[in-house]
Length: 373
Image 1 (cartoon, rainbow, N blue to C red):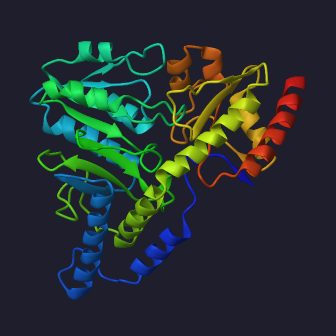
Image 2: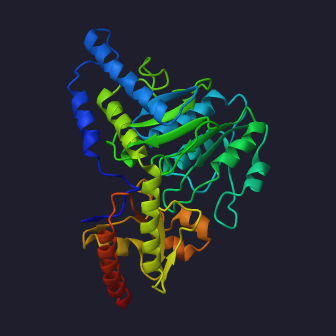
Image 3: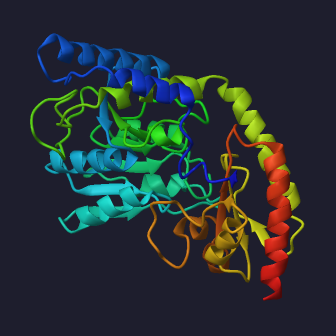
């Protein structure tokens, strides 16, 4: 098997699974007051302290969720419902994950106004247009850090600097595709979403990091748990394993980035030889994601041809709907044909040069066979 879909999900590291298994031996409910509950609670507090130290969190609170989708929903709806007396205007981009897009579409039915930032010549959000959209009643800006389909890296630092002049407007950043791949600074961001299964952790656990002085309207009610913003019995084995996954993924982050960049360049050099293959990801993109278009061949057809050879890539982000084209690729390239025929190849430090060599051989066979048809 050649797995090239790391942006959809990553394999669980054995050390992470070991942490989960060991923590599972503690029977207590962390909300219980007896010593078994206290033991589980202590494990959560220690894991939370580790995550806080690893991400250099200052005056911030960690809310554990089931993943980034829930974290995005809590951030967006939590701010909207809590601060709607200040205004109902929200700004976002065309590159957002479906959990962001659909949360915003839901808010529109409740009278909220959503504006989308235009793209500049590099496909990045246009900061000049962004400034023009800001209003006194803007309560939230929600922007992905790295687009999950193209790898495009958004100028979060510049956005946060602009928002310093708008103290009543909060900044939410979906960092699901960036934490663990590049160094991040969360100091000037009000809310951050990320998930364990993108950093070699176990599915079912994620987090929303928020400023302590920021209030949210909860999505799930039922009393205090690890926080008042998300009720329910906390899963201490998942939380402990989440901390372990984060610690491991941040080790050697620069060396891992350079290795992935080398693999990305190798792929691009070889795929550029095909006249009907277009590289959509540009120099402003994370090297872990390489988005390409194969003109004249349906994306799903090519994906399944690779799958028949035990090679796994994706057409769009795993959570996206079944639209006929990729909105993210269209926003970047402004080419509908490329948006209709795009494939996402996503690699990681676990990817080997030998795997890519074999992938390129299989790619060539699939390309030639499908072109004949």
